[in-house]
Image (cartoon, rainbow, N blue to C red; front, top):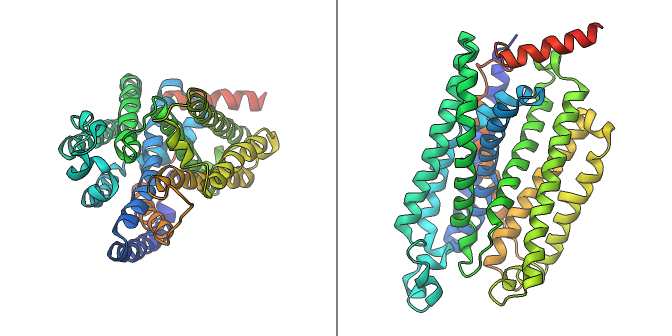
Length: 396
């Protein structure tokens, strides 16, 4: 068996279950809009930024894979391609946020802009029509580039045409440049502009690394479950899991480096227009959340992934991935919520339901894309060469 057709019934049942949970959770969280409109949109934005980070991160990972190769990339290539095919779903799921623009963004309220010189200076960029145009541009780039990445990969798998590998590599180079630009500007629009008086030049990099990290954790979890089925069960090996663990470790260290760099620069400069952003996230209970991120999203996973034994055991690596993914969701809460609750820690029931709702819908879309395609690119000459090389080493 080279695909998931034998398990399609199980996947369909799981898809229906996640879709049902997602619809129910979204419907219940919508009730919160009637009692506290701003809180609902705040929760929805936090959940959306978390879940959209997975296909965005996969978008970057698949292009890195095409440029550098490596066995780890071929093992996760098909789940990654299934993830990036969900961009149209995420574009639709963003639309409710347009109804809450004035609840989320001060620059979207004319009465505030009229009395704020800083917002007036930024009005050329921070305005609803241009915000909407940029949203269309981001998803147009992500959807169109992803379309060709998946199409050429499947064509190559079907025909064995080696020239398609060169096309994928040629597209991935400029695609990564577009990835960096679109991620940077999208998080500036969606998250940083919640507090439009504050800015950071490393903000986009923090989210690029965060998207890559959460995407990798999700794919590790998927591979853990798929590794029990053919053909992954025939090729998955401890050294491949170790490669994925090393890659996760690299992303964790890079996340810590970029996050600490931003904090250090703001602390050293000590400027009045910069420090409030961190002050809102260091006191009133939010500081405890920040410390938990340092401990559970960096220190503990870092120490665990230093162990070769942890990285070579599928269950242990999956457990670390689950922890890091959950803490990334907490990080999104830490980024978004203090913009509205500056004096004290606050969490709402919609902060729980919104991630469950969007997550259920997204996972259902992912599961719909996953079956029917070979789980390994058996006709990719790079993968064939790697398999033959390891067979030679194995045989002696």
